Amino acid sequence: MGAGALVAWIPALVPEFGTGAGTPTPAATPPPSATPTATPSAVPAPEQPAPSVPPDPIAVPLFDRAARSLDDPASLWVVVDKTRPLNPVGYAPTDLVDVPVPHVWSPQLRREASDATVALFAAFAAETGLQLQSQSAYRSFATQVTVYDADVAANGQAFADTSTARPGTSEHQTGLAIDISALPGNCSLDVCFGDTVQGQWLAGNARRFGFLLRYPADKVAITGYAYEPWHFRYIGTELATEMHATGTTTLEEFFGLPAAPGYR
Image (spheres, rainbow, N blue to C red):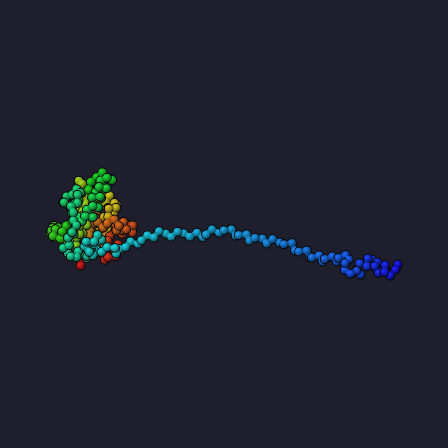
């Protein structure tokens, strides 16, 4: 073989001796890429219920014991007893009206108390089929002088002071008090009235109309007067309801006033 042919043959026989135009060097195989791992999406935590918050209780305003005067004789809450005389002592209401109910003596009361009396008498008749009547209502200072003096003359002052107010200290003078009896009369102005149908109904229901049984049997040491199941004092339904709710039976105790067992 000639030298030229040998030279031509060698590259064909031994490719790596060529000029680089021979078989290409295989490219390096890239390392297998890591199989992508799906990142788990965050699983939301179960929704927790909002903490239970109890509703605010309905605000009930406290009873305002200072809403009305206890000293002004024209106040529905005026407290009159043996140690708390009316001021002025000769006070007379300016809104007295005739009370259109059955009566022994023609009654007058302040207008609001009169309206409440009419409603009370009507309710009693509707609920029991019986009748009430007024024994005595408003009494002026001058009239109270006559009533008190007569009691003293008949029974002595010691007894009179447990059954009849001295002039200027009577609830009747306020035009807010009424003595009630049965019609026809039964135990009128007597403790046995408390055992009658009329007395029992009044003791349990007078508060519905704004009245207070003013001289209870168990509060003589507080009020200074013997039990009078016939004597009712108008104080308005607001106060009457509150006193009933708190179980308080005298104005002195409800308003934190001193007991009045006797005159100063």
